Length: 461
Ligand code: SF4
Image (tube, rainbow, N blue to C red):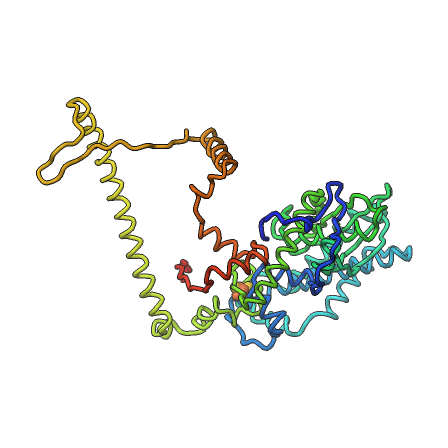
């Protein structure tokens, strides 16, 4: 997510007491952004464009590589499993709302029935191809879900830790209370504990590392927490968010204090700003990550298209591909440049060490002889004196540097000694970290253009 750029008042998110700040002047209303969309945008802006702006359907795309299809299919099964488990949990707690407690056998049987009813033939068809990589079968996922439910049931039955208020409830959260940033999302379960406190329950099934809470879960939890706080204000008070990791039979309370919540609100509004910047500039860069293996637009993506095409060619035909030849030619030159740079750096370091030694000897000689210049055959080495400013090494030096910067700012001299950091400015532009008004004014002064930058990535065979 975008890191913090302090937002200007009156746009601040919360008062010190943690109450949402409401701007007295409501700004123009913006669309409601589903959290799923924002999450996809944060994962990969290009994938977001394909899905939500171009409305591409995964099924309309050409199949990609077998390997990646299989990998993505595996993800699909995990998502399918997660959906079935959430449905089972919903059924369990909905029955409990009517004071009916399903037995473990009834509950698991319902889950299995639901699995069979919803099992997608597309998943099945693609899955058949997985016999080439026979690690996990669909039955293994089904069994994993069964075990998750059994563990959950044994751990929490008779489910009287709290009383359910809402199940799979849709929420809309107006981040700053001025209709400028509205996010929508469902909340799995909201309950009231015996001490009267409110609890949000989240389930995760696809987690690979026990205890690891990824940014998506934290984001989901934070917004759910705020939404419940507001809807049940003032009785809700502090809302606890519990994440249930069903695969590892664990639960954890998400670390969401007011500071973290207000930070996540700020990040959410910045993501919305970025989405809108992307739309106005029509800039949706791809971002490669582990998610690519789960991306339905893999075969369409410029980052993956060529690789995708090649894997379906025989090795001989691959060697004849123009793209392969161009890339190989570029990589050879790139490696040669790297080798020369390395040699140059090593040589330079050797020469610099020799020069330091020669300099010391020469200065020593000049000092002993009382000379200000030493004559060679065709050149003279003059000894000039210049002012040097140094900070002591380590923490003390950093503190002094900061103090000096502060002093210069106070004295109004900062502009005399500092200059524009173009790299930092470029990053701020790309990350949408510049307020729209400043951005517009800046665009009057600089020209922005998208330049391609080549990067060599080792992929192996
Ligand atoms: S394959 Fe990866 S980089 Fe390409 S659109 Fe999908 S998520 Fe983005």
